[in-house]
Every structure is written in C-alpha cells, then in structure tokens.
Length: 365
Image: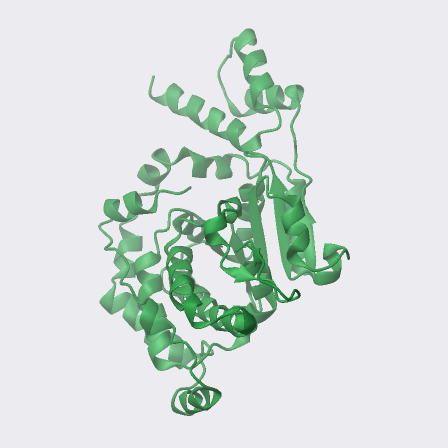
C-alpha cells in the first residue's frame, strides 16, 4: 500500500480538509431535491467551470509550484516498487492486453485476479500510459473519506430503503471521482505532465489535498455531475482484497426478503454505468465466489458487462534468467542466479524489484 502521509510531509503538502458533510446531504424528499436542482446547475466540466476549478488549484493550493519542485530522482530512489513499473514497461503483458480490450469494448467492469506480484497493478499502469486513469486504493484519501461518509449516512436508511441508500452513495462517489478527474485535467493542461506522472502521483496519494478542495467547490455550487464528464478515462480500484472484511459489509442484498450483507467491493462494479467510465477492480487472490456475485444468479459475468482477467505472464526459471541477464550489465554468480530464478518465477513485480535493487547496489556499493 502506498505511503501517502510520508509523501505529503516530504512535499510539505497539508492534510486534506474534511469536507464530507458539505459534500453529501441525505435526501429528505423528492421535492427538496427538485428545489435544489433549480438553484444549482449540473457540473459538466465546461470551459468556464474548469477555469474556476483551475483557479482554486493554482491560486489557493499552488499545485503548479508543487509540480515544478518535484524531484523525480529522489522520488524513485525511495520507491523502487514504482520504478519497477518502468523497468517492466517493455516486457509482454497478457493481462495488460486483455484489460486494454476490455476497456475498449462493451465491458463496464474488468476484474483482475491473481497472486501477489503477478502483474495486476502493472497491467493497470500500462493502460494508464495510454488512457487517463483515476487510480485509487483503500489507502487513498478519497476512498477512506468516502467510506466514512457511507457509515455516517447508513443509519438514515433501513433495509427496505437499500436502493435509495445505494443511489445516495453512488451520487456521492461520483463527486469524489469527478474531483480527482478535474485535478488530473489541470495537471495535464496547465502543468504539461505525462500520464505516467499522474499514475505515480496517485499511487502515493499525493493529490488528496487538491481532491478535497475541488470536491468542496463542486459540492457547494452544483447539484449533480453530468455523466459524460468521465467518458475519456477509466477508474481503477487496486488492492481491493482489503475490502473483503466484515467491517466493510455496509451494503445489503435487495433480491432477498431478509437482511444479508454483501462485500463493499461490489459497490464499485455497480457504479460503472452511473460513472460513465470503465471500472477496473484489482486485488490479490480476490475470492472468485464473491466476484461471481457481482451479477446475480448463475449467469456468466460477461452478461453483466464484467470481464474477468486472470491470465498473467508467469515467467519460468529460464525466462527469469534471460530477463536478469538482459537488464543487469554485470556478471552474476551462476549459483545465485539459479536460486533467484527459483524464487522469482511467476512474480514479475518482485523480479523487477530484485533487478532494481541490484542496479542500486551497483551504483552505491
């Protein structure tokens, strides 16, 4: 899990402002909702609306100056697990290709399932180089604050009002995600940063203060979010296995006549049609039985617009040897190479971390 707090302290970025209560108010009646819509318009990411948001990011938050002062060498030196993505950029990735096809065609949701280090995050990274990715983990401020808000409003809806509760938190989640999208647009248009830079900044939760500022602005001035705002990007929820704990079971099934809790991770799949963007859910050894419930009944996931991606590049020992010898320009003891090949087979990410550590040792013996 990325170390967001440490990164914020390093760049002297303050903690995000709590904006939960201003971001979402529980709907009291349809009439109240109608009055609300009359007084405030929808956020469509128009040129005028974006200009207002960009002004907040530049004048109030100084985001452009933060980007200018970014020290890439220092950043990757402390985070070899991120640099490993760069090292593996040229290597083949079946999962990345399959995910790319899923994002391109009719699937609303893609689910990446595999063991630790097999290349799930790397598949997301490779696609994020080509298409703007809103990248979140359970450690991201957006998901932490959103979950707390879900807990806060949960008592306002009993089991019979489950659908209303889901609609409420879907609208709320849309605002959080839209806020991040605006921040990414600003960095691309005003700071001329790459998609790779955006992915890495999100990986360490380095945009949380800016997310909170834009979320507060959008929540105060606009009644809802236009669905087309996110049409040109995709949302990735990584490390989703951390949501498979009873404490996160704050949703109930609606196809039974008794209260039965379901995993919180299913919520993100349900959001896909609402967000207007493709959703990618990834996690170590996600429970296939639970993922199978993303739909309902016994029909295949594909009928619900869900693509299951589980074929990764499990390198064998000879593959590992070839990759190590290709990427390291120094002689390696044959016995050591055999041992490392045994332990690193089937773990591309750990293999890249091993190579990165070797490179650092070569330069700093």
